[in-house]
Image (tube, rainbow, N blue to C red; front, side):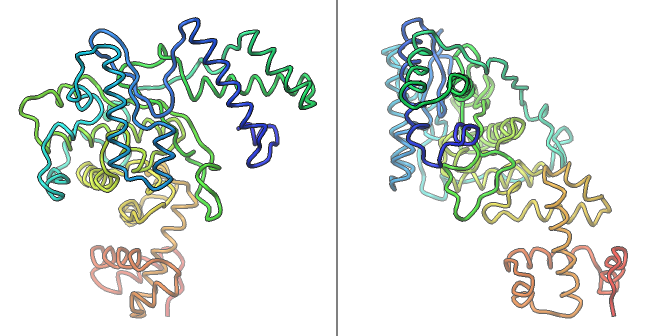
Length: 409
C-alpha cells in the first residue's frame, strides 16, 4: 500500500525502514500501556479463563519454508511455540492442549500415509446444505466489520517519525502526515487489537480476489488483504475433545472449518490457498485439497479459492459445474454470480466448450484439439466427458450450437 500510494520503488529501503521503525516504536509504547494485538498467522484462543494468542505460522517459519524447510518440521516448531505460550499462562499445559486447539489431526495415531489421509465418504447432499451458491449463514460465517482502522499514534512516536521524514528525507509536512496516517491504518488492519477478536478467530493474509498471478510477479509483490477468519467454534473444539475421536470425525470437522474460513476470507475480498488453509488447520496441503474436493462434491458447490476463482493450479471441478449450468440454460451473468467468477471468465469457459464441441463434430482427436485450442488435455477430456453425458448424438450437438449462431456445414 505504501509503495502504491506514495510512489515508493518496488523494493524501497525507505518504505521498509518506516514500517519496521514504526512497528518497533508502537510495540514499545503499547507494551507499556497494556495494549495487546493479534498478528498475522496467530489465532486467539480461550484457555483456562484467559485469552492466549497461539502461532500458526510466524515470519521466521515462513522464511524457513521459503528456504526449503519441510512443512512438517515448521509445523512442529509452531506447535512447540504454542505450547510455550500456553505454559506461560498455565505451567500445567500439555501438548495435548495444543493439539486440541490448533492441530486436531495430531490427537490420532498415524497408521501410514494412506490411513492418515483417509477421507469421509461422499454422501447425498443434505437438504439443508447450500446448493451451487455459497450460503455464508449455513457455513457458520459471521459478518466481520472492521471499524477500528484509523489507528492511534502517541505523540512521542508521531514526533519521531515526522522528524525523520521531514528533516532527513526532505518530505513535506503534509506528505509526512499522510504517510504516518497510512502506517497507523495498516497496523490496525494487519494487527487488530485482541479485544477486537473473539476466541477462535485468527488473523491471516490472503491474496486479493482481483489480483491475478503473473509469471514475473513474486508473491511478495501481489496485492495482499489482511483477513479475520473463524478457525474454530466451541462445538468444533468439543469434537476434538471427544474420547471416541476418529479420523472421519477430524476430517469432517476440518472440512467445515476450511469451508467457513475460505468463505469468510472471500467476503473480505481475499482468497486463501490450500497452503494457507493447510497451516490454519495444521494439515498437509495435498490433504486439504482432497478435503475441499470431497466437500464440494458432497454439497454441490464450489468453494472460493485461487483454484476456482483465479484458475490457479489444476482444478477442473468449477469449470465442469459452470458448463453444466450453461447447458441447463442459465445466462452467463447468472452463472458468474452463482460461481463467484467474473462474467469475462464465464464467457471464456463457454467459448472453450463450444470450440471443443465444434472439433468433436469433425472427429478431431483430443490431443490435436488441445494443441489447436491451446488448452490442456485435461480440460479437453473434461469437456468431452460432458459432451457424452449431455448429448445423445452429433445432431444434438449441432442443434445446441445453432442456438448461439454457429454456422455449421
